Picture 1: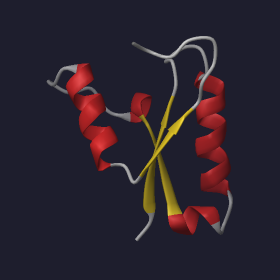
Picture 2 (picture 1 turned 45 degrees about the vertical axis):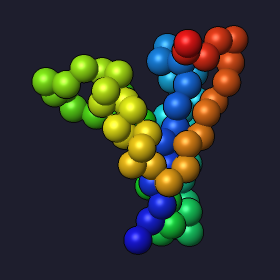
Picture 3 (picture 1 turned 135 degrees about the horizontal axis):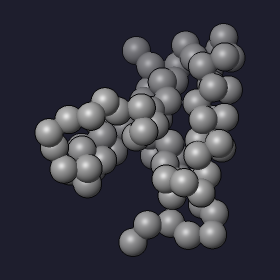
Length: 74
């Protein structure tokens, strides 16, 4: 079973970098055996508040990877 990585940053500031982390792990034969990367923007639309959905997905993650730039949430 693979470990779930929640890759997080300010939505618009580091979008390219979040996708690069996800794509790198998915493309590497060894890493993809052990890790599954989740990006919040990959979550389909639902009838749940965004903050509730975000926190629920963080709680399900085994690893929380925070990419920090000029700002980071509140």
